[in-house]
Image (cartoon, rainbow, N blue to C red; front, side, top):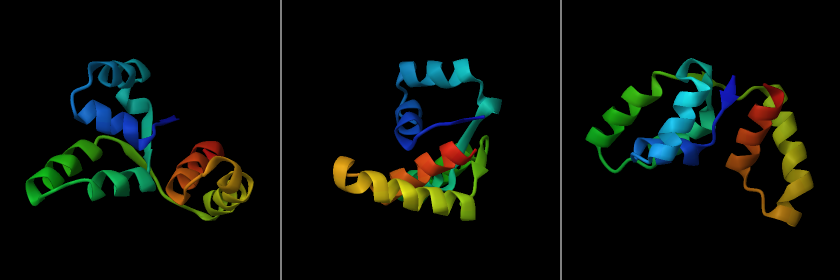
Length: 101
């Protein structure tokens, strides 16, 4: 399983060929999204039509839900990297999901 960050999907969904090629190279059946990535993608929609299109795209991927192991790791990451690297909570949860899974 490969967990891709939100920006990869935004680029692919906006037609950037390099992002599309990378996702295809990984294999769509091998790609998963963090629940945070799903939320970020949905949050970026401007109307109901865009939302419906995004939901159609998302349904092709497995979504990894946030659990206690991810929460614990995300807290550790925030403690370690918030001050030194400016790590934000959504990115900490996505990174923790990747590390745990």
